[in-house]
Length: 441
Image (cartoon, rainbow, N blue to C red; front, side, top):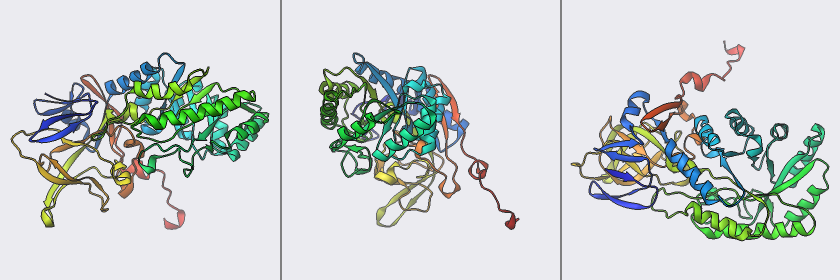
């Protein structure tokens, strides 16, 4: 039995060294299992491409986060953008989670699964007037305001509703999160938040507004962060601002520290939840506040796989080998967007086969439609299946219908049972909002 663990380990796999980085996924008698379900049996019922999620993994990751902050007053507000499937949201709400949302649609999703509005925070740099109005009327915990113009918009809308809007200012601390530049959000050149140099003056403006209730301060510096230092430095800057605010009688009840805790995709050595909690809480010592957390990837990233079928194999010039699969970048964008690494393993291993070096390619007519280049792995034949690992976060939530390809189905596994939690798109699903003008008919 080859166990895929949630920490960096190396195991001999068909003559090569494969880094195994997920738990609740393992080989039993050469078959890949998710919890106690054989993945090929799930495929037989629901086809490919297909997202498969481990409920046990999601629950354990959430509990790790809550245990790490257990002695501090806190709310874990799951970042809905990481994976917004309703069954996953409901799983977390049933555990007591709140939600971090960044759109009116995500707010509605959170409410639809019964999330307490007083556990919902609304982030995002471009909230529309309608979205702000809905959030105020819903009575959420707080709106994380990202600009002076947004603050004025919130004031005007709240005044028209005669409701005080709960507001925290999102501060940009100009901290390098040491992550991919596309997912860095806390540097001064990024579009997010209000400069830490202006924060106190903007808080003074908010204090003078009749329908703004200052509830806290917010900060989010990026995603897939693997070191303590960026988190610690951001909290040091937040505490300095909080102390300046206290000196002018502006209390801060909530400190929203954002998310960003990284996971293993390849050979990373990420922080534990305990390490992360220490980096957050130690600089905030002495404050009487509620810590709001926005983990997303940490909760669901290693809980999901994207299963795909091999369609063709072919040889190119210069000894290039290509494995063509039925999943494409419309199903999983991360490799195309970021050059992101995902481990790729066969759903059924054949120990007698020697490894080869191959390119795992999708069917879309774009050179960037590729999941792996020069990857050493067991050769596969048409009709066999591969599992693209660590796709629980920013996989399905970023999927689209490019080339009129329907988005894949999603399955949630619980022990020895699996449940369809989203059907694959049909062509009717893709086209049902299109309207043919009369002059064409």
